Amino acid sequence: MIRLVCPLCSTTIADGREPEVGEACPGCSAIVLGGGNDPISGVAAALDQNGDVELPVDEVARALFALAAPDPRARLAGITSDERDGFYRWWVLVRNDEGDVLESLLDPADSSDDTRSG
Ligand SMILES: [Zn+2]
Image (cartoon, rainbow, N blue to C red):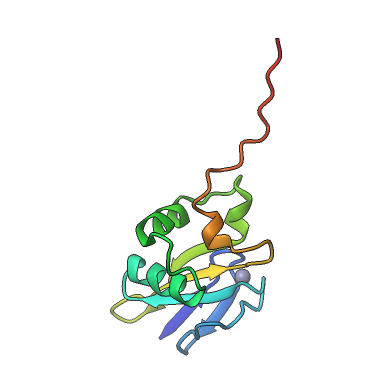
């Protein structure tokens, strides 16, 4: 049994088969990257597949796990494990519609709404 559900839109991407690197989520068209046996190796593989080999793996992993709803990047990237018997593989889903989303994760969250008066 293998099942991969998209962390961005909850659509089932792979059911009963191995997810494939580079396939698109049928729900939101995010691209499947990664496939490591733990989160760090999954992120390392995803960075390699996305052409971001120079980015620090641990920082990108931390940023992926920290992504949450108010941050618009939470709709563009996510990390998840699949479900299978006995062990997991870790996958990174990315939508590069607005540029390289994995690279953008290393920027601080957008806090442009900084209103001061007086
Ligand atoms: Zn999706």
